[in-house]
Length: 220
Image (cartoon, rainbow, N blue to C red; front, side, top):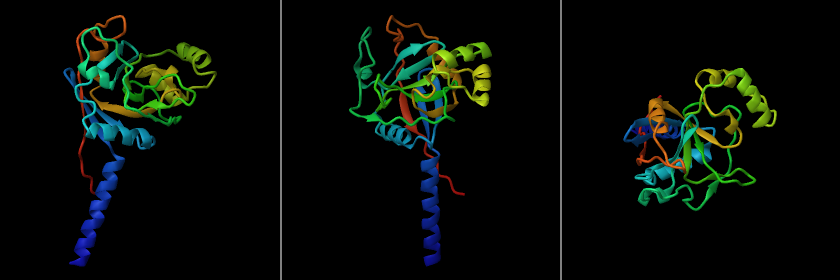
């Protein structure tokens, strides 16, 4: 009996650890659902996003800033009660998160990034985020990005190929923390990014969201 209990405890522990390291979230919108894998390499951002999602913090907030061929942005708590024409983007949760830059995490299409204000440490907003739509680049255009936006830093060959085929927003690399990737529902980004907006890039028709943590027990 003790062996059975110990085995059960071990399996439960493995399941909990596996679930913690394979976090996925669902962003539910009127235009479809996006499934996003959160990166283990950015644990501060991952854990914060899971915490807020479990608290239903994002429910009824809007994608309040949309720029075609760039990104869609949300997470402003002030957007829950926003009236048409209200300027959004200044709402916060009361804390920031230290930047977690990694060379292997970059702004390809579908990347989940943390928004931030202009601060010397590039600390992230505690709640506002964006999802990249971006565009496809040529080698010549990427060369210009390297010189004018990345301070001469060379884009790795494999990432350059992604920017030339899948697309993205390479000028944001190593300036904003990337902490997840859309693995299902990329077409939802395109639908939202195509919406008509006002002079502040807010969609003329509200795009509310709900975010849920995908619950999955893994035994292996």
